Structure formats: structure tokens, C-alpha cells
Length: 486
Image (tube, rainbow, N blue to C red; front, side, top):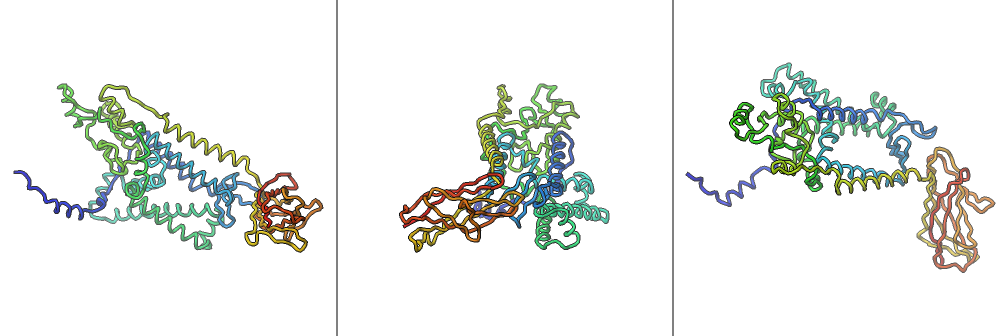
């Protein structure tokens, strides 16, 4: 008997009552060994080693500068990265780094899909570490599933307590390492341990401890599925040539048990290499069945490739039933056409070219940047003043930055205005009519400069040029402005 038709109004009401999100299904990823798992371990050790240890690396910059290799000195407005020192006026370098990071992410996506998510994303790295602790204490997939279903015993409670304690210690040191990038690490560690550190340090450690513990210990794949925007963005940036973790259904279907498929092959009937063991699903950290095709939840980590290869090796079948491939190549093999692999193509060349241009521009700018910074700002009100002798005077605010670690003496001159006279408030004028400016090491000095024309016959606007010269080295910086008159 056919089912009765459903009323459209009833269907709409049921749809309105449906939840916006599917309830979370607990995932118990199984441990796996293989090439991609080894790569993930290496990436985990290298990235976490860099994050935790870099604040303790020393870098000698001289007596008047901090000796921490990587330091964000908010109090003095400096960012130190080994031999590079970035001032607030040079924030464009930070912008350039962000542009490079975005373009590199686009290039990685064009080459191999969400490879960033699978190997380098902080959420993936810390979740991997938390999984490793969980397996070490509670056992692998089957053990954890059994313990969660059975009645809680004292032994299991002790194991879970130890697991959460280690998770909290990892999360706490994650937050602690973060604040070390903003102050001298060794003294701050001592202050934190003796409860003498600033309250803001404890607040940030608390925030990052909570977020790391929550995101890596509990939310895990939910972050990748619901919170992270990248899966949705990358779908618009990929194309048919991008390599993704792909189930080669041209080889695997129709799937079935090993014995059943062997019988079908002996009978000359279609039989695939997939024996439906579900190992690819069991090892997936997001619970994806890659055999259903490319899905938004898949982070392209390659663990299913390792699991499938281990099974194929045991049953003497060719490896890489699951591999980094394209849907286009799967269809090409089914149709007897030649596979196409195009890593080098207009999209990847474009991203590589832009990365090279931005990178070379930043390196060139760093190599040629001066250690003198001159800024000149004309007074807004009044624009000019007529003196008692009929001459015109303009006021300027001059800012001089010394990016050197020693005190420097500069000479400030102005040209472009005939018969110009230069005065500096609180400074001195030498015999060559130059304003002498002294600036301490790694400091900025702001002063008032007055420029006067000795005659009254001056155009309403005249281009003038300020030149700041280091008297010791001869290095100079030049800035243009205007001299205003009636």
C-alpha cells in the first residue's frame, strides 16, 4: 500500500521545527601508522617546538635593546624578530606578512586542497596532541568506547582525571608561552611562578588555557565543521585540478567482503578492491567516510590513506585505493582516458608570482630602509603669521626618529624658499644656519620648527624641502611641505 501524501503545510511545519545543527556524535579516532601520520608527527613536533621554545632564544642587539630574539614590545611600540626591528610607522611590514600568509594559503589550496587544515592549523596540531595523551592513558578506539559505555570505575575515573590534568597543563603552558612573546621570557617565568607578574599576564594565560582546553579537548571537529570559515571559503578558490584525498571508486567499487569479491572475480563479475572494513572511517578525526566523496568536514589529513594502505598491504592488493587525486582523473580512468596532473597552471603561477613580488618588495624595502625617520606637519591654524618687519613665518611640527642603538646628532635644513630663515624651539642653530637635533638611542623626538621669509613678496604657496642629515655618517632623510603666505 502506498504511503499517504504529506500535506505541504505539515511538511513546512516539520521543517521549521527541525534543529539548525545536527547533534554531535562522539568520535573515537583510531591510531594509525603510515607516511602521512609520520608527516603529521613531524609537523606537530616542529611547530609546537617553535611555539614553546622561541621566546627563550636570545639575540644580542647591543646594550640599549632587549636580547629576546622574538619580542612584541607593546610598551615601547617595537616588534623584534631576530635582526629585524619594526617600528609603529612600519606597520606595512605586518600587513605584507598577512598578505603573504593569505596568498600562501590560497596557493596551498590550489595545489592540495585543505592541506593547511590537515597538517598546520593550530586546531589540528593541538587536537592531535590531546588525542595522543588520550590514547596513551585510556587506550585506543575500542578501549575508549568500551570505557565510556561501561559503568564508571575508580580506575577509569583515575585515568580520565589524569588525562584532563595533562590536558590542562598543556593548555596552561600554551597560554603561558603566548604571554612570553610580549615580555622578557626568563624574568617573566620567575614572576609568574612567584605570583609577582602583572595581572594582565594571568588574565591572558587564563583565557588561552580555557580556549585551548575547550577547543582541543572537547569541541575538536566541531571547530572545523561549524566555527572555521575556511572550509566554505576554500570551496570558492579550488578548481578541478586541485589534489584532494579521494576514494578511487573506479577501483574500489562494487565493494564487498574479501571472500565475496574473490568469488565474484572468479566468476568474471565486477568486484572492487574495497572490502568495506571501515578502517578509513575509524581513523578519521572528523568521522568522515571518504568513500562518499569530498565533504566539507574532511580536513585532508591523509590518515585514511595510511589506514587503507595498511589493509591493502595485508590482502595483497595495490596500494593507494585512497590517495591524493582528483575527481577528474577518476572519471578519466573509468573512460579509458589519460590522467591529467597539473600542479603548474595559471592559478598556481599567479599565486606564486604575487607571493614572489610581495616577498621581494618587502626584502628590498628592509634592505634599503634608513635608520632615520623624518616627519613634518604644517600648522593648521594659523597657516602663517606676518611679523612686524613684514616677513612671513610658518610653523611646523617636526618628528625625528632614531632607529639606531646609539645617540645621534642631526642637522636640519630647509631649501626651496629664497632668503629663508630657520629657527628651532628649544634647540640651537649652528654657524651654517642649520638646526641641530639630538635624539637618544631607539627614540623619537618631536619639536617645533619656525621657517621665515625675509621678504614680504612671497607666493601664496611655495614648495619647500626639509633635509635631516646625520652629522656622523652623512645619512639623510628628506621631506617635502609647503610654505604658505597671503
